Image (cartoon, rainbow, N blue to C red; front, side, top):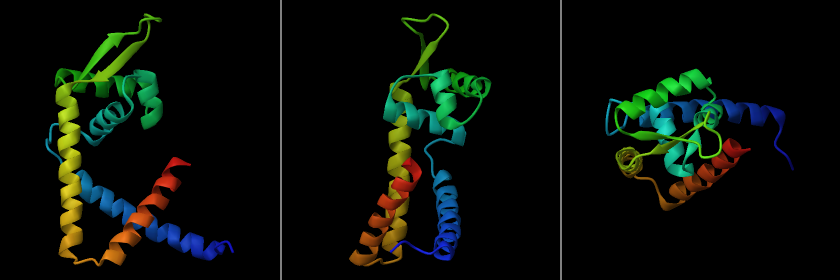
Length: 146
């Protein structure tokens, strides 16, 4: 039997608030303060999905192409991404993450995972509670990917 509209609405509000607070807290955990959240998101996209055009990155991050160009300029100046002319269309540029950029992503993710697991350990969560969080994470992923 489907959930009622009121239950869905109330749960949505609670989930939104909890997700926002947790995301904000984890965004503060980083390897370097030299990157903005937007720049880190671009590095994550490149690390997970490989080479992309500036337009594709802009669409994914829901920013304008000029804004993405500015983000890429900053990342390139730090040696975290490279640009390569597209082999089939000289007007397009492909953006790749460098080894240094990938290292920042991996180390930041590890640090954030450590922070979260430490918090769960400090709360002394039971195995059942941890499994509930795993189940919730899977459902949240479904919501995010729809």
